[in-house]
Image (spheres, rainbow, N blue to C red):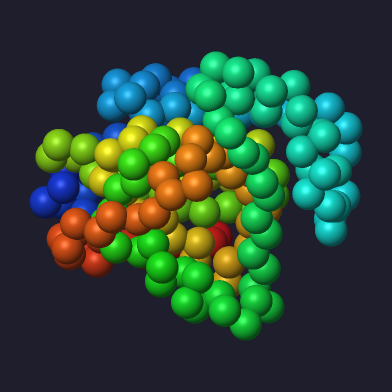
Length: 182
């Protein structure tokens, strides 16, 4: 189940808010310019489905978002626990960074943990199947897929180089718990 926890950035053990209510998650994230939606497939998506089949199942929502936000490309990424590069893939975005375009991900299956650092607050969002998250351009954050990663996600891009991570050098991400699936 989706979950949002909000912390003071100097108190990683004491959440100020914990909620699993999708509407409340969306309202809280909207306050910082982030987005959260839930989508439903127009047809079943079987395990091992091709990129084309996944995109076709969410075509109406994808087309709406592309039209609203000007995305130029959409793809599907899939990471499984047996991936031989899982440790390197996990560590790639565990430190605080930002991108020069919005980071928009929709979880077709599995889960991951996005953590946004805005002002003096940290917003930890566990995204699961049917969740879309939009992290605004320039927002410092980190992403943890867990030690046994499993997710299939649709990614949206505006420009080829916009998704490069620009790391802040801060150690804040190491002060907050890493992602462990329940």
